[in-house]
Each structure stands twice: as structure tokens, then as C-alpha cells.
Length: 244
Image (tube, rainbow, N blue to C red; front, side, top):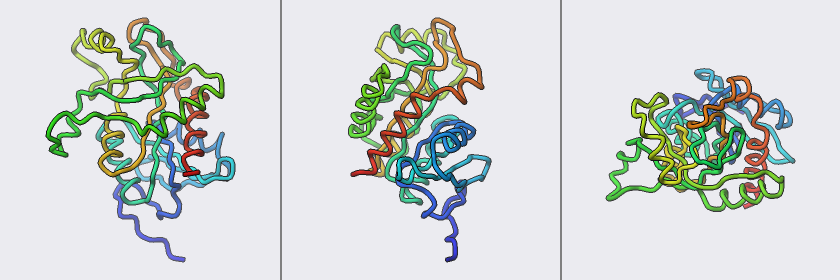
């Protein structure tokens, strides 16, 4: 059977090679790690720009994992194309975040119910108001239940999606904390808005890699390899989403 030409400039794959549920870390090497350690018989479906994507089976169901890069524009491109061109229904971001909340510690899991942001990504929709970037409730509920079942303490609440990694405003972090923001990251709002616009499902499950106020931090290798609890919650949530 001939492989159909991909409609995407960023993903070179036949639609049949990509599962309905996709886990998306920012780092493509983390996608490879998930495929190698959690999926059975993984097959690489994308190498364009080295944004690696793999599909395999998890507990007998087809699941994909693919990197989404850094920042709202990058996750916006990859999530839009997966949803719109490749028939994906569910995307779960698995990534690192900087701790903000007083009770959030390095290596903790944060499940993002919503994402405040300074991104202007949603301006394209010409929404007559401020469009709230929120997770799919079904995925959110499942992820919380899976964390509880595994005995993992997961903080559930709002994160902040920033366009800046190096913020020149020294007072920003303190203001985020005043409003109950749990963690700082760079993609969730873009993913949530894209899913909302296309009538799809999205969730961000994050591991705290560093803390804005305490200064504690994991190194690059630890970020890539050590986020097992987050990965397992996401896999179980994706697996259950395929029961619908």
C-alpha cells in the first residue's frame, strides 16, 4: 500500500502511523526515552527537524509520543498538525516546570487545570473577551485518579505559560505566587487553546525541575531521564482515554 504524502511541513508520516492519543514532551530525546522504556515495539514515524515521534503499544493499545519543542509557537504548530492532519484526539504534554507555589517542591508532579499566560497566541481567534486556557476535564479527572492510585502526590491547579525563559522583570514571580500559580512553564496555554479551538482534548502533566524561589534544580540529564511518575500517570491517562 502506498504511503500518503503528509500534508504537514513538520511531520513526515502517514496518518495510520500515529495513534489517537499522543504524549508530548518538549525534548524529543525524552520522547525517545518514553518509547524505549514504556512502549512495546516502538516505531519512529517522524525525524523532520529531529523532532522525534514514535508509536508503539502500551497494555495492548496504540499510543504515540513525540516532542513539541520549546514555547507556545512550537507546541502550537505540532499540536495543530497532529489534531488537524493526523486524526489525533488527545494530547498530553509531559514536561518540566519551575516551581512557584510555597508547597511545590522539586520533583513534585503538577497537573495543570488551567494556564494563565503572557502569550498573545489566542489573538488570532478574535475572541470577544479573554479566552481561558483550560484542560479537558475528563483527562484531568483521570490523571488525578491515577496519581492517587499510584500514591503520587500531585498538585492540581493553575500554571503560568510564559513567552520568556529569562524574564527581565524581577517582580513577576512574586506576583504569580500571589495569584496561586503553582508552576511556570512555556507551552500549556498554547496547547489548551489549540485543543479548544479544534474540539479536541488536552492536558499538561508537569514535573518540577527547579524552584524559582528556593533555587533548587535538577540538571539536564535528570530532567530527561528521571520523570517516571509523570510519565506513568500520562500513559495511564492516555490509555484510559482510548476506552471512550
